[in-house]
Image 1: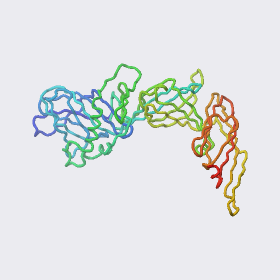
Image 2 (image 1 turned 180 degrees about the vertical axis):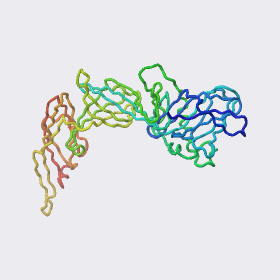
Image 3 (image 1 turned 30 degrees about the vertical axis):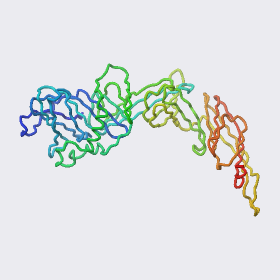
Image 4 (image 1 turned 180 degrees about the horizontal axis):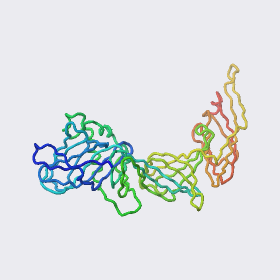
Length: 446
């Protein structure tokens, strides 16, 4: 097990050399809190330890070997005996790697709680979701999860975990700072207490989340994630504590919402999807859809369908999506559907209404096309199908024949048909498209 090394050494005078101690007597962490960003390789760690000090001069040894801790972000604050303990400086001994020594002047003797904060790399999280459609596909159960991965080189036992959605501006990569031979780039700089670039980021993060209480483990029950809005960030706090060992990942439940209303829509657009019908699933992150309390972090949603009383599920597809703010709609592409078919057929082609210039050459005409669209639903549930037809000109006229459903002109060269088909049915309609070419476009304008 890898572990950050801490030790307290009592010294009699400032001229004494730094002493080495028996590291087996080190105090364990009492609490640790991880605030992990998903938009940057960055984690803010806050840990509390009960340090035993003697009256007078003390030193605290901190070693981060084999970890990705940024030593320039280290900070320690006593949480008791205010005004009686002075943490005067942090020194990085010459020709010693991965080791810092805090000088502590104490007017008291005994155990003193301190809080140590620093930035580290190697911790990350991602969100993923499972949606289970009801048999009629009008609603689904939505379950959210987060996976926290620890490759920082340090084990974090019983850690309170907080997840941040949002972007942070990083001048230095934490992993780069962690791997430097000396904390500030050279042995001559070892007595510098803060690197300006890292200190700026560290101070902003610590002030930003400085009011958070480091919680212990609550009574045993299902995990809950508490969400808070923080300016341009959003904070998710996972209930209780979890041990996250280095080299391992842990899945944690985020939320569950029953009976979220959804819309299944099958789209056909030859120019965009080829000859395939693509299935889309949409819902909104609002109260009407049993959601809307917090933004939903981006991730991958895998969709299943309940197909019987035995609890069997059929896989329907999956889709990645980005962060969904409160009140926003989301439309997920579940991929090609083989059980809903749209077949357009060109039935007739003709040219009419020729126009000639003063030399007798053809200067304009009408291209006339008759199309038949057949739509088949082979599923055991009703479906809604959206068909877009795009034209190669902005000068056209269209006449519909048959059951076209809802017909809309979307823009200058696109129309849309929306049809609803019962299970195991098909529907056919036709349209005649007249496209005005050359000088016939002038007649169309008139």
